[in-house]
Image 1 (tube, helix red, strand yellow):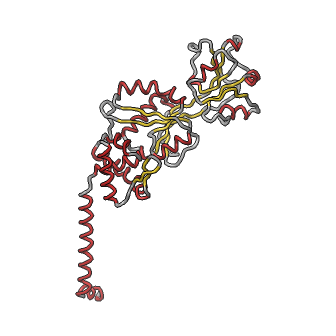
Image 2 (image 1 turned 135 degrees about the vertical axis):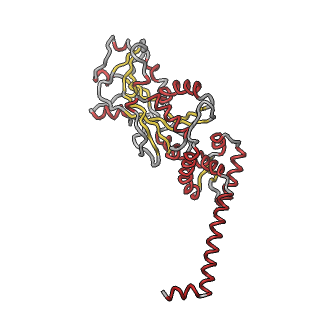
Image 3 (image 1 turned 180 degrees about the horizontal axis):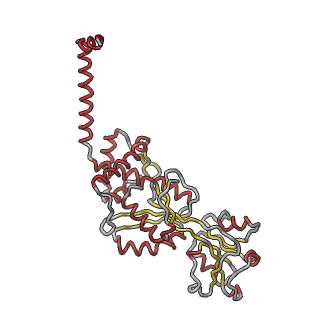
Length: 341
């Protein structure tokens, strides 16, 4: 105890202690002043830029002009003493510092929105652009009803729809090039979220005259027919041919094409058979000169999902469009919660 008293009574050590306290107090005050000098709106701009990785898209998202977003980015670069986003291949790529900032910034802004109660998205009044990636099949199943609903309930909401393979769509979601992808995703890339929209089964379509009045087709007759395959790549690595191979058979593909919408019309007046997802085929009352029937072998159903990057979880507009799509496509008992891959 005497040693401690001696050290505190020592003029040199006492001076050094006071100097240390002064320096730390000064650093704290400087830190507080730096925080007070930050325009929190610029952090919202940074979050949009890190999400969109494109100045024009970020400007649309924020309802700001492109020059305003560019000026904010310049200020942010000065604030963080880092380029944050550098141009590469037509888009902005985040630096290592930006990648480190992004998740913490998104979480902080989500807490701030909760704090000030600005979590709601008003589709009747707000302007927003959603970028969706989907197959031709998804467009047939979803877009007519979705667009009709948007024109009535959200007239200032616009869509940009693209098409790609499932691998490319996942990559686009991770890179921030799209907001939402809809399709069949047996596996998911890291940091992607998913919700099940519905489970789909398969049906066959053939020209009614070629069936001679029959409403079904035996497996032997099915295998004798030429077939239409809908596939982006034109290969046989699909659910139908895999299921057929599982029972020791192979069909002849007379036509492979990537367009779901065109396929049913190609069957009319031919001996072709089309086996596709049931939802794009007409029902019995609407089929006319075509006949819809069940496949003569078992094909496992597939899960149709929407996927997005986890950075979108707290975005109220994004949550609104996800819920809207789920409500349109999914029976209540088939809707799953958000799950991690």
